Length: 184
Image 1 (cartoon, rainbow, N blue to C red):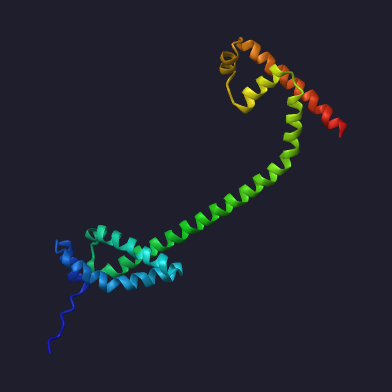
Image 2 (image 1 turned 90 degrees about the vertical axis):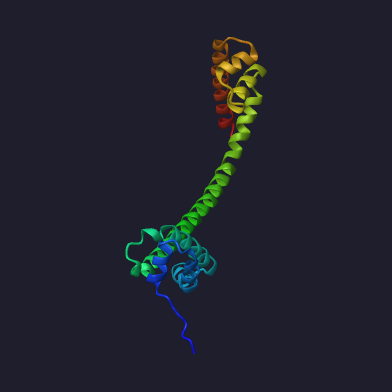
């Protein structure tokens, strides 16, 4: 009976480095399952471990020519897998933290929006009490966010008049809002 030839890692790597690419499947077959297990050991997630092993193979193939000591292939490959697995966990934790932050921020915004509703209603009520030209200036400047120059052009009035009307509209709003607050 003929004994199967089982080439060493060193032989396979040296062959691959010298351009014999058909030895790569032997290395992959020999180590893929082990790399998946190493990744799973870190991530505790089978799907993630498989992805990490795949990514690790891409890095291994890309960087194998830089491996100085071919006898250290196994530990070098394991280090790549470990680093990618830890990076994956850190990225996942960061994304989870960001997602939680977004949820908390939206909850905070919703709560603050709920608190602002009475203020907005009072402000809208006060704006509706202003004369029409002052309402227009307030709406154009604050709601539509036009600049003073744009309002001047739009209404065909001097910029000084725009500034004056905006100032007077703000002052009138302040006095209306004070009256509303004192009535409560």
